[in-house]
Length: 365
Figure 1 (cartoon, rainbow, N blue to C red):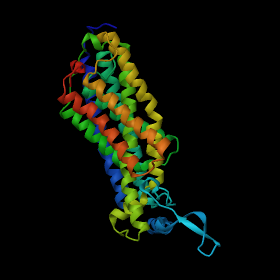
Figure 2 (cartoon, rainbow, N blue to C red):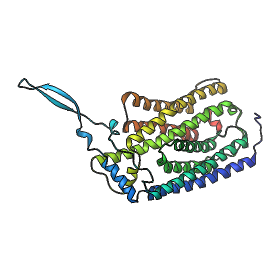
Figure 3 (spheres, rainbow, N blue to C red):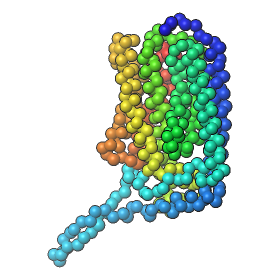
């Protein structure tokens, strides 16, 4: 590769046009998803579906019986008693609730808006992909050498992962509204605050490890993000199920939205599977970064702020997965730990890059 290769300004401009066009279409997808949620729950079919979900809720589990115990009475006889089963937050997801009917609420109008939203999302993603590809062609290197390029590619990969789940017939359309909102914020921040003109990088970054290390970090972060959305929605849905079980659920717009989401147990399982799926890739990301550091700086590890927070993020996710596997955490405690881990990932990206100076700072904003 020619390190002094000139920047193709035409391709750079095409990239900017495509990214802005993608933002416009993402905005249309956001509005369509919003309409899906707003109008999806008002039909008679949707109301009946919501009623079925609520009726499927079991009685309050606090008095469930546990294993039977045989004791000796004062008269010398025996009696069989039921040991009370203590239901904790860690097992609170297993209430027997059915998954909700989805964002469309079972209505034809809502489903139409949902399908329109998916079509806009696919179109926006293609424009987004084109913008990243032209950025790559303009500088003839991996298009993630600074925060602007990382952000645009991160959003593209997150949407791509979502579309792959849809193509695999997974019922994840409920993510659409939150995903398009996040991608719009991500691209808006990238264009307004983080934008960096197409240019060549310092010699230390001209390595095939740029393709390997940073691409793995982007993919890991995108899947961690989808898991974080599932975790956050789990907390809301779990609160709703507790209220329904206790007979305190309100029949209002918020309740209508909550009952259309998947069950808390489903959301919890989705978040866990996404985190578990991508954790090995995040582990490889850190290992690849250490190998690249040895080639660039002469040392595998120097406790640079970026290295340190990458390791902290790894420890947080490892703790979450270990707690799920060994302690059986399935409820709010595990969800809080997963969100803390994702917060570490976000700080590693935004906080370290913007506010902390280290060896990674030569990449620029």
